Length: 151
Image 1: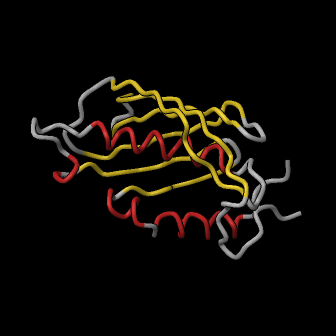
Image 2: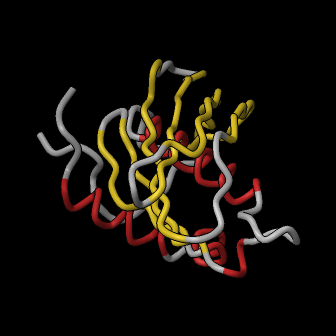
């Protein structure tokens, strides 16, 4: 497969990072490539549950987002994705700090894809891991004004 167009990647990252949910959580798509994506978040007070540790939904959102974008570039230009299954394990409690989720598409299909993501803290300690099954949605692509792959 031809490598993704860098202008498309930059425009996509800007559009994703400017959309409501990532802005609300303070989450950013850092990078995206074929079968890979990296998502970052700095955990702060607004992300904590009543016991003073990071809410599991924040970690879940990181895994969901990293797996989603790791599978995205394999889709036709007019298609989007939806998560149909998300499984994760919380491996360590988090109170604050930088988190990075590395997503990897394990199997990309025309209709169903399967991906995994690992979340690590600033010291590189694995704090969570998850897998996701994703379904392609024809006609629901993202238009960023650039072509996905340059020849």
